[in-house]
Image (cartoon, rainbow, N blue to C red; front, side, top):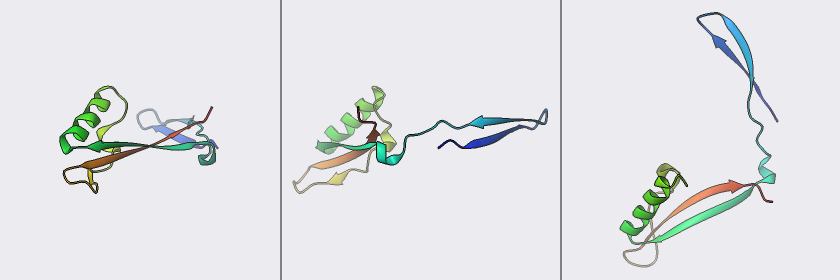
Length: 84
């Protein structure tokens, strides 16, 4: 579904309709979860490396969560893709 927004240029009092991009319905998208498990340093380094590679923003990952193993943490990234 497309939504129309009205852009108003206050300097010239000109209005223009802008059409927002159409996103596929949620039912058409597949949810993926990417999980990184390891030491605090290893998980943090991996998240920062993936950020530098433009895979995901650091803020998109969950906070570091403890696992059942001492000294081990995990972080989760959720993404949505369109199946082929």
